[in-house]
Length: 308
Image 1 (tube, rainbow, N blue to C red):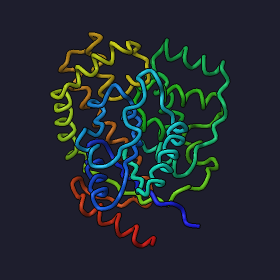
Image 2: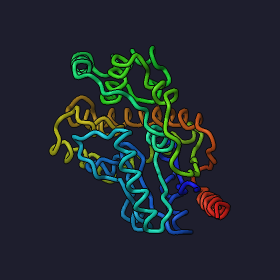
Image 3: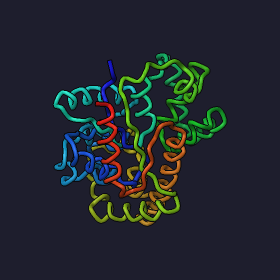
């Protein structure tokens, strides 16, 4: 029996993945399912560039803006939620289109979750105590030595993921890269057409800076201020996202607004570079430039026709 088809639109931030998905939905019944780890947060629709009202009106959208700032999202939880949404979309006679830039989430969905053992509580507490005393940057520096490939994919200020990598290494003696690539995974449950949107980093950078300015004009700072009133814990998972962390620095008096904006642009560029590095290692991706939406839709329609 053939595996059910899904389309995966991937690539670095700011490359027009949502508009490409909507172009596909204009040609056949389809629904968009998010696989971006930041766009799950309810309090940050502007800062995380979640689809706006017009984009959502074009076709159904799922797994956007549902998680409180204080809750964390993991790859395992994402897979559980995504599988549920994929089956619901298929039950409606629609094509599931997964859209996002969190490569680990997509890989976990397509190849299975690495069976990382439960971490003993004493090791978890030891790592959390280190984070509190030294900051996640110290753990990231160690990670750069023990697991440089994984370190390149996460930000030094990402408390959750740096702590997770440290506790897994302490508990198992294996790196996150080993668990994600060398351990045995379940076979892919879907027949996936992977479509990538990318642009040279030097060409993408000014577009990212302009998008950040638009986010600020549309009320990104007010959004962060309201979120801080609801969740003033600076260590909450939702605050670790790029844009959120920099504006939090301004709200807490550590940065001027100009400094926060400059840091936001710099960190977004670095994140886009990490995304490009990750996806360039993936196989079977059909690459397009931003705006080539008709060609993306043509490929999707032809691929489905070939499958019968």
